[in-house]
Amino acid sequence: MSLWAFRFILWYLCILLVQPQNRFFFLHPLHIADIAVMGGVGLHVLSAMQDGRPLIRFGPATITALLLMFFSFISLYAGAMQTSSYWNANIDLIFKNALVLIMIEAMATTVERVWAVQATMLFATLWWVKGGLRIAAAGSTYAGDRIHGPAVSLIENPNGFAYLMTVMIPLYLYFYQKSPYKYVRWAFLGLAVASVYIVLQTGSRTGLIALILVGAFLLPKYGAQYKKAILIGGVAIFILSSSIGSMNMERYRTIWTSIQGFLATDYEDKDPSQMDQDEQSAWERKMKNLHTWRLIKEYPVFGVGLQPNDSLVMEKYYYASGQVHNEILYAGKQMGFIGMGLYLSFVLGTFIRGWVIQRRARYTWPALADMGWTFKMQAMVIMIGGFFSPIPWNPITLTLAGSVSALILNLREHEGL
Image (cartoon, rainbow, N blue to C red; front, side):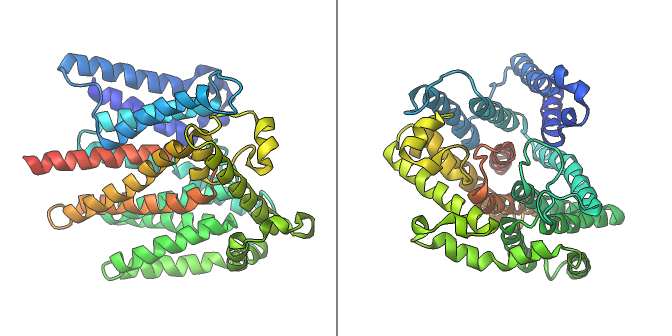
């Protein structure tokens, strides 16, 4: 029964990442995602009662998730600008994703089950790769030369597509290393190369910076061991990059200029009507960040609410209304410094635990050490991509946090034997 409970949670992850109901509309009224979650939780409760096991494992990620659920509920009522305490999309997202994290940490009691969570995400995101390649081949773009991505709710724009696609690249490379079959290994390498190509086709400067970061850590670690693969992959990326649209290449050339402008102190004095589209976008992001930070400092305890009244927000800080394209600031807007601390606990916790696993298993369990490195790299991408993303409680972020937390508990148990 425990195995079936775990399978239901894995099916939920597949539904979450593939979103089949957006392609096959007859699935909408069936609530397949809700059924998967409820089935997983129900079977897990029965299994725990049958075996006399605790319902949850109080690992670090689970404790943080429980705190997130508690403080988000408090913020729904105590938020300074929360005029409606009705259940809304934001708290629904938090509770569902936190529950999945708790279930993953409770059920992933072996290294193999943690591996299964990562494998599920890998195979589910094949839909993303397929969607990105098809859209690029068809020339269907979001704006200019920028491709959008598959029709899934996690991907709202080219930046979101590049962000989440880059999170998956270390995972593809991990499976490339560990597969015992030659042709399967090359298929996983092909996935990584295709993902790099897709990220470049999005025209996302955030995605490009994240790619450079992944490459900077990848080459020193695997350069000597996988020279042939790196050479072939590099040549393939170079050839594919020749098809990147000129407008995307122009965006990439403005990265340094955008960084300088973003860090400028005279932003509020500039006239957005005199800017081009990219400059105006950067200006609006800067203003949103500035106004949101001021709002957080004014309401530091519970923020202004999970879904505050925008008219009240705009009365004080106009650009802090709506979504904030910065995950830690968005968390702070919703729940003040408490929310920012919880967000950092998930992201930094994933990085630190991945690093600890890599260090402790380096000589005794190399495959586990490589899995720790994968979590560490994924956390680093989230740190960068999250700076420009409006989804602080991203289900992928929380799933990774729950998985690596379960993995380090399993490692401690293994070392204790």
